[in-house]
Length: 414
Image (cartoon, rainbow, N blue to C red; front, side):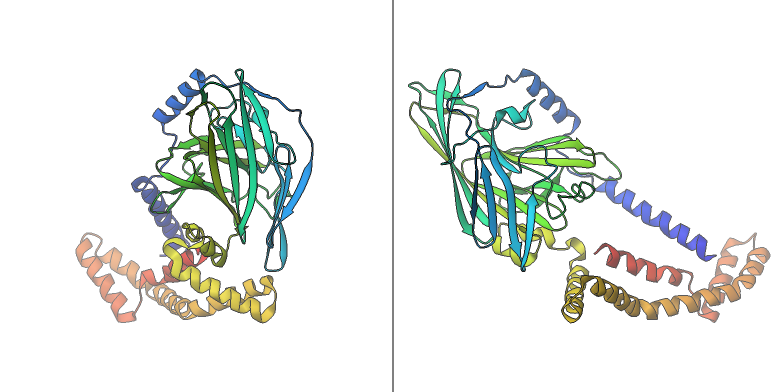
């Protein structure tokens, strides 16, 4: 069997395993056909509220910061978000986003046909007053820093009218892309993933999944009873938001852009009745920071699962340790990558030598195998026995040529 044929058979086997895994363990999509139908019907039946701001729009920019975070607030939301890590300055989101990086809007992103018009406009002191169907509602927004990379958004909603009203709620919305490459449209939407955190288990479930077997979901809605927060990440940065007071459902939408698919996540408060002069307080905890376990573990709430390496965790942890050692010795990530590649090659070299020897032996006995196949072509059982005996005598193994490749694949993925 030639080397090219073995490689071809190996690739066919590998693709077969991937395909079988996808069939046996299909992605848990939110928008199945029935749910898509229900969502479409809900959109058609739902009448969007008309919001009128009592006070005029006041344009402003207000910068607030802690040791690791710098937030630029405007009348519509967060214009810029920056954080500091390991002596470096990261701009989380500024360019290419369809909406503000982080903002409050009335209603739902899943059911709204024009989200931008539903921005809640605030004055510089964080207050807003809106009229809905003749009823006045006041909204107060407060930002409170909690710890490194963590702050709270407190929203107080009051019914200022003299009769009860049905309040459709609001959404706290985060729109990609994530840094540090948001200044470059070619990389702005690469590796952008979104999902929700399950209650109690703190498992991270991805939504709007893209794979070679299915397209990207355009929208997804998760009920408040199963979620404890939502998240967005790329290879460098993590954004997470969890409701601390007030129940919310999770909503996700995907938007086509010139250079890729942007994703938007939101927590939508539930529709409820507000009695006259009653007030409801909503509190959200926001995490913004690097995709590093030492930071994610500090925040807790299962966020460390985003960098746990999955089923390849032992290999992942070993490679992570190794590359950090090389970086500490050289001070260059580029040289560290070269050194780790050389180290892996040296570790696998004994197997590669064994594989080369086995291939050479197979080449030597190849004529003898052909003779046996010709001699016993009418007796497959005898032919296989003679070939097996030939392999034993010469110490050859047809499978040994693929062994280094089989070991390199999990290392490469990790």
